[in-house]
Image (cartoon, rainbow, N blue to C red; front, side, top):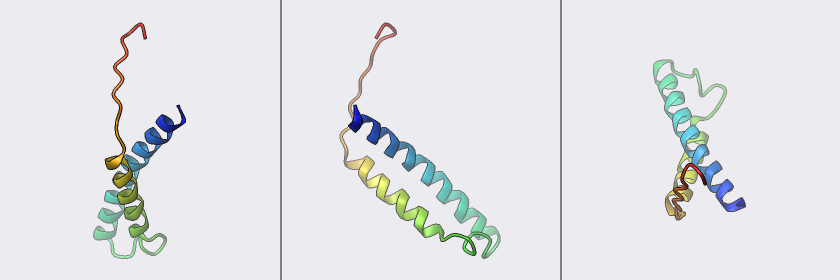
Length: 69
């Protein structure tokens, strides 16, 4: 139960950090210093890559439970 929760949270962290990385780099490209003055976007990129490696190397169990459980 706990392992499944951790894997699910890691998957959500991977998705959220990926989207945030793309948005931050897009904003930084549009206006120089707009993001990097407050936050280093590379930190979010490292979180994205780290959670992606964890997500890639953890076995996924597919449980197809019916409507009745």
